[in-house]
Image (cartoon, rainbow, N blue to C red; front, side):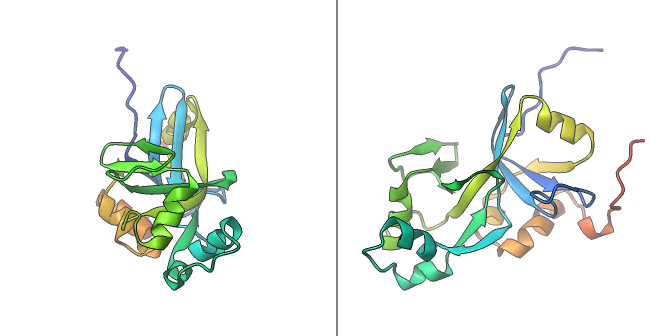
Length: 189
């Protein structure tokens, strides 16, 4: 067998296969922020958690009434890890107190990005999550071998332009796959 460099999936979507049993990931699409030899980190992009930006801002700035637009900005359940921590995925360009540049995208984790979005000076395109998905070294690779996920390169239009309930099907369609036609049974040829 040839030795080859591992293939990492940073800036890819993980599309849960229909047989995904883990309730944290069943019927989800996850954007991979990082994937390397030490593990992977991603944000589930299609599971709102019944909170709005207004709800979060009321906790962060109780003395100020959030702008009305914040009521319609959903917060997503980004994954089962650190569900009390916020992450904002947005196009690169603007930086905040804690911003990690990812190429075309950036990930901000400081409160100032939320205030900027609320005040209209933040990134126009954004996805706000509480929590993230994390995998230890080799864990995601094992799940891929077990056919738990489909993968494809990420697309900003799916992240920011589509309604959340269309993101899973749109990501799968990038591969020419209709998830409703796949069996819920896993197998190996």
